[in-house]
Length: 115
Length: 111
Image (cartoon, rainbow over all chains, first blue to last red; front, side, top):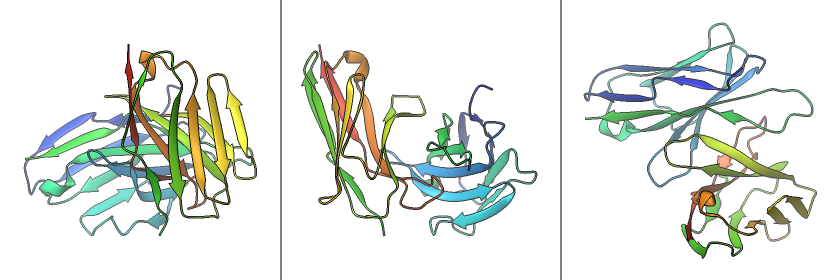
């Protein structure tokens, strides 16, 4: 396993278009998280899945954002009608709910630029 | 809500020690973390400390935790140019390894 994988690494889109990002977590991890990082800031939590269930959504996740994890493995994050303010790095992380686990592993992110 | 604060920038000479400081507001954290982010790379967990510990040492890294003052620090001994990066303090106050990050401290190491 090579870690958390995100695709694409970069996406440039025109304002108003829809975009979808994919995250493949570490295979034995049942927890998956999406974060957003804007320039000069730390990552901010967007949403969290345990297996296929979406258990928490941040108020940052507007109605234009939707995330899924249909089979409890990979996840997608879709942004509809993109706005310039959506330009950011979107980070995915995964972890295990095992007793001794202390760490979420991050992917390299998808950098979105809305023009 | 939870708030994690860091100074924005630190510059040190190669071979000196670096100390990056962090304050947080939520006392319910179980773990506190230090992550490193290099340009174009993802977040790398450097080290973490359990909330009932005062100190943790891991090779060149020393983490100090003052729970009373809600203050966390990361000391990097013998700082190298390869240590130049942004360092994020974070905690799991949200539970289930959901992490709240600070704003990051950019460490510049001068040769």
